[in-house]
Figure: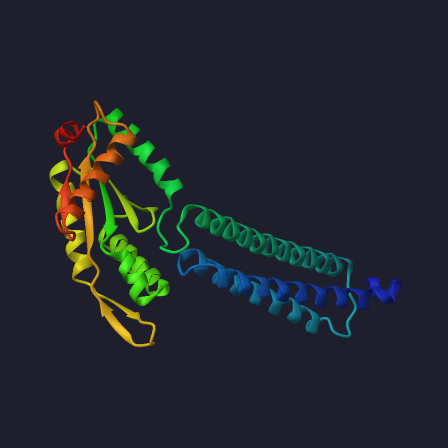
Length: 292
């Protein structure tokens, strides 16, 4: 039987080189899969990439096995076609893995940018921009569907004295400590955002008025009962008890705007300060009218 090596002896060497090139391309794809799995969180998607890596290893073994089988032998036309298909398959696998890796990096970059645009860099909670948008959306939703909506305004007590006594690094640690406790103590549907300075606003969707201040009291007790360890100017560690004053209010769908809702929560927080701090005060619309 006539072979390609009988006609073009150099083609036999070319086929061998192509086989080894295909194996090298698959090895490069394996490296990309390894890099990609490092960027992915643990879970089903990551596990499927491990399965793909297993298939790529079997393909590499097949390429090398075919190369060893044909070492020193001649290639027929059909075997030459098989080699070309093998190489094209390796190129395809490499391109898919490369595109997947680049797409993963790009999505991760976009996620980081969005996260930075939405969160306060110090406290790690939502920033004022997100709060304004979510508050506006939740007020509109609550009005449209007659849903309950609670709002808390949280302010750290005597925070300035913490900065003056222990330094601004200790003050930053206290802010992070309080923010973490608030997030851990609330539902995922609740919105915790930095309003400004040491003030934190909490949006409580689907929370009846009777429960809004109960949530606030639970948060106050959690913060007061969880001291934070800070380092003073002399490098000594100190346990510091932090307290907060909280104003709470609820949406009145017929009358409230975003501004009036925030104003009532702020008034409640101010009254909590006036009453000795470390308290929860509910500010009612009747009080608002009396104040006016």
